[in-house]
Length: 283
Ligand SMILES: Nc1ncnc2c1ncn2[C@@H]1O[C@H](COP(=O)(O)OP(=O)(O)OP(=O)(O)O)[C@@H](O)[C@H]1O
Ligand SMILES: [Mg+2]
Image (cartoon, rainbow, N blue to C red):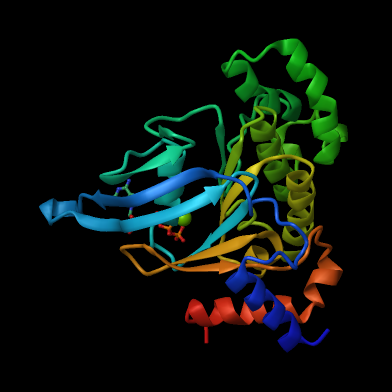
């Protein structure tokens, strides 16, 4: 099918609400996370006036959706993610998980950061178990789930190794494992693959999609990679320069399940990458 025809179908579907693409998980689900007119200010150094890091940010993430955030460096993406995680309070507005305002970290929301923070004196398996232990999750339940999780993450052979024996990609997989073992409803990811080489990053993207597809997980991912955002997401939110706010909300109507070779040779993929590059001011 020609690209213009595909785009026409997508546009018609968006206009009429008609569902011509394969069903997207988030489409009919209620909002799981609602960011409502959120603002954040930080004190500047040397007694200068506080500056606004985020201003009037609103977004809704539906249950089961995969949403990415793109934006210039310093526009407040990490700050926003920390606020959704309940690690940083809002100065204005509020963030809801279901009907409940988020004011502190909650078990339903897990966070994966750019570099994993595993304890060097614990094995990979024990590092993955750590969060569950700290939360006092029933040990039998944890031990029952762990082998399948290690298998999914390709870490079975490394469970008894120590973090320094792992590659960067393995460490990030372990960090994802730490969170998944806690069975959160939402996984927040702040440039989780930013420090990895391109090949490892592509592989982990495929693994992440597989894990997401097999679960009911809702993912909110911050990334600097337009390609990664398009390949993974149901929607890509674009933020402005500081003070950050959401200036574009781009729906990615690529069929699922997504295989890298199929997706990347689909003209629609190129269309979304070009569209987002334009919106980001890349060209
Ligand atoms: N705890 C803090 N105290 C003071 N200023 C902060 C604090 N945290 C973040 N900032 C400032 O808020 C702004 C947004 O920072 P943030 O880390 O959220 O940006 P970002 O979009 O994640 O950037 P990057 O893409 O480079 O990771 C920056 O100007 C940063 O210096
Ligand atoms: Mg950041």
